[in-house]
Amino acid sequence: MRTLAWIMVLVGTPIAVGAFYFALKPIADMYRQAATDPLADSMPSDGKGVAKEMLVPAAVGVVCGGLASAGSLMLFVTKRRRRAPKQ
Image: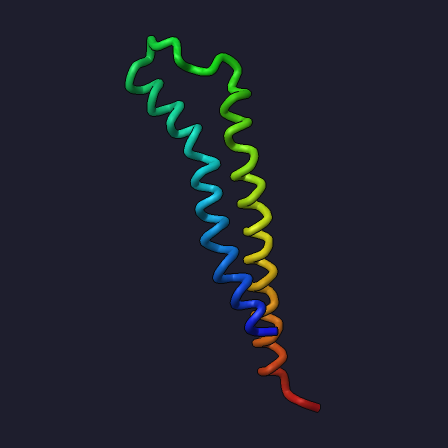
């Protein structure tokens, strides 16, 4: 169980961090473009295009974040069971 938990944590965490980076990148690009050239017409009018770009990476980040959290919880439980006095 510990091996599976470590795999879940070590695989889920970097994927989740990378996915959240790619989910927030369109917003950062939009603000960077607005700060660079405020009068440009290339800004999205309603933001739905930005939301569509963010949807898949955010979903992947949530799933992998949950995977990493579950692995972390499994490691915590196994650690507590080993420390518990045997009766």
